[in-house]
Amino acid sequence: MARILVIDDDELVAKTIVALLESAAHEVEVAINGREALKAFRAGAFDLIVTDIFMPEVEGLETIREIRRIDRKVPIIAMSGGPRATIMSGAMGTMDHLEVAQLLGATRSVGKPITRSKLLPVVNECLSGAATGTTEE
Image 1 (cartoon, rainbow, N blue to C red):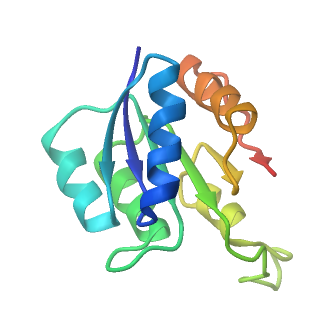
Image 2 (image 1 turned 90 degrees about the vertical axis):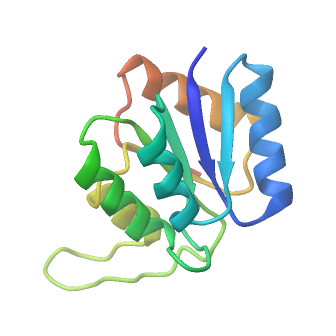
């Protein structure tokens, strides 16, 4: 059993993720934005972070960056249902939000909609230390 912090401003998505993680015997805490998440992260120890990218107040990329300043080792799964639009282009090629999240320190990334078969294997990989740094569509 792991202690997992889920960060998502969409209540239905958060409830779905909590149900999936609790069905796998994990203890879950929810934050509705990056500001709440950082407060919770500083107050308690978590084995894994699952964060949305697009949120009000403090968004996911900023949250990932700040968590990495505090803790370089905790696994972070970034997730997004937003368009896989190119947000950076140039010498590094083109990247979307989930790829940028991994550059900022996310261990893995998962595209929404979130399903049991998509999320739980990535959670297990991150918790076991076997995460490969890829994106699950």
